[in-house]
Image 1 (tube, rainbow, N blue to C red):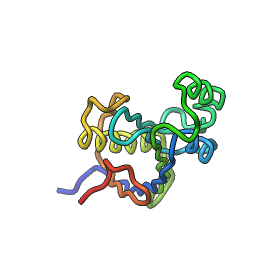
Image 2 (cartoon, rainbow, N blue to C red):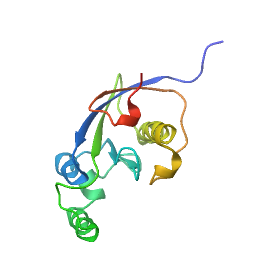
Image 3 (tube, rainbow, N blue to C red):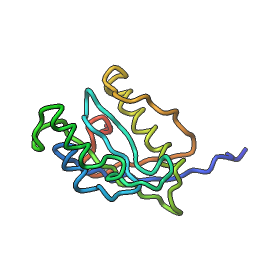
Length: 146
């Protein structure tokens, strides 16, 4: 019997940053992105383009809010948790917001399996069927597979 679920092949190219400030500066105009703040504990994993698909990272996190967080946390830009940007590439067609939610859920699930739910600062989204993800670049450690 043939499967009725269409397989979406997606590659995620990861880039590591020393902190979220550097990620924000580099990708503030990104409209489709998976991002990770932290790596093994107190980690937040989110996405841009999964809600209405209209806002970029700079609109989601306005610079004055980022600066305010820096002041509240008493951090300098060169300190803080490591951050990662995941650039999405699909074998065919364009990404819809449902695709980005599915990719985000897969990355969140990988984190929870590797590091435990108690280290997550997000509520994991439900996994979706029909997605095959490959990761390359400077991956967060929880995505490294033997």
